[in-house]
Image (cartoon, rainbow, N blue to C red):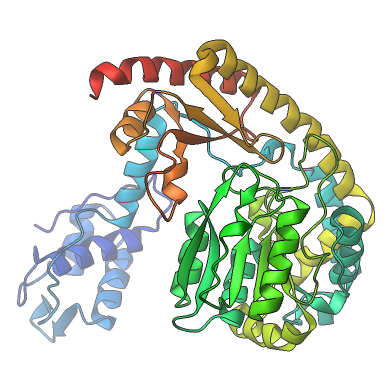
Length: 472
């Protein structure tokens, strides 16, 4: 008997259940070449399903070559249908296992860069979306320009000049699917195999990967409390570009002073290279207004990258790349062959969101919220740990750095801390030169409530007290 479980409560047609289980058994070798299957009438009676269900399942398996039918004889497993199994679980099973693992632990995750997603202005966005769909022409639903909608680029150029001191014409802007695509486009524009990129150390590991995947050789410059140490810029090479986060260094949090910015501008003028400026979350500056962009000092030598992932939501996948004039046409071509264009409808919604003043209102609201959460985190750390911890890099953004006098955050210790219900992230994971930041961890707070922050710090304290005896 060819028995298989049939579950009528599943959101899967009975035909698909029968087909999938027979197919799986053939691939795994449970049903082997030449083996005869029950008749459709017999199998339907065993499974208590309609004969048509089995007929359609058999027809599909015959069409795909898993079975062969011999007139007057029956249906048999075809030759060459066994596939040695190398995967321990199916993707569906893996998904369930991952979900189970997530459900088991009530882990408070101090991951950086996640905004307060429950504060996303859904009603406003929904209303603007409805209005756009009502107003949009049929032509807008077709293929669009790779550089993005004119409406958004025009409004964005005005907004960035007002808030960040960015000097650009709308034609210099390319709308991207987030900052990651903007960085990838910049790498494709500027780099060929073997080119040098001067880069801050530490810096996001993903950014390192984007540049190395483009064939670049990375030349790390250590960062201090003010960002990249520009006095250490190499004179023996001519890099194609210098990458940095001048308004809010990631992860250490420093703001690059004007003297170092001028050094960088003079450096790329001499080397004929470019500066790639990632301005990822500088809107949320808590001591004074956001600092002006580096791009405003030298528009002809700076590629400026921004996104709305930290301001609004990563799910929108909306970012932008601002280019020197000489790179515009080439970038449009690269963008076209990357994904044709970013969602036209989402661009139009965002354009109205900015034009009608909602973005500035949202940023102002979120600054108050994040500043409050930052203070809760700083206060909780100081109350529990006192002078055992030094807090740096907290003037801007959605994270801060804690430096510990007596703790080196090895993989083992981090795993133990997570087992205690709190997840923190080592600065060392983002370094090129290892060993300089082993006592530092990144703690993001934008997405956590006050209660979660306090509880997370409490758990961290318990974990650090216990980790000394557990891991020598």
